[in-house]
Image (cartoon, rainbow, N blue to C red):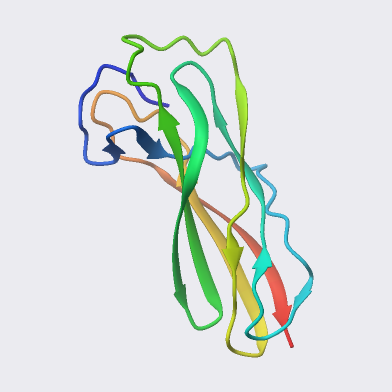
Length: 132
């Protein structure tokens, strides 16, 4: 997570931080999708304390690979974080593949506490789909 002290580390943006994922995070998506048709994928990031809500995703695509980086909001009015109130923060980006065949939805989140200027230790979770 992040210490909510108002600092601006390289991976902490004003009001948002890279979403925290665990190795057991499940990416839900259809087994088969139609080429050129949008579909929804969903997953959960984890918050609490000053990490209060999901605020979107950055999506990068290349052929039949889509990389989704989730972001969660930071409450800037909190001067110190207390993580006793764990929160599940849902994300549901709309995705699309434009090539037929096997495809990968890759969620790229942080697996470590993003405090004191720490860079994320990236963790990727993948879901395979077939595009027809």
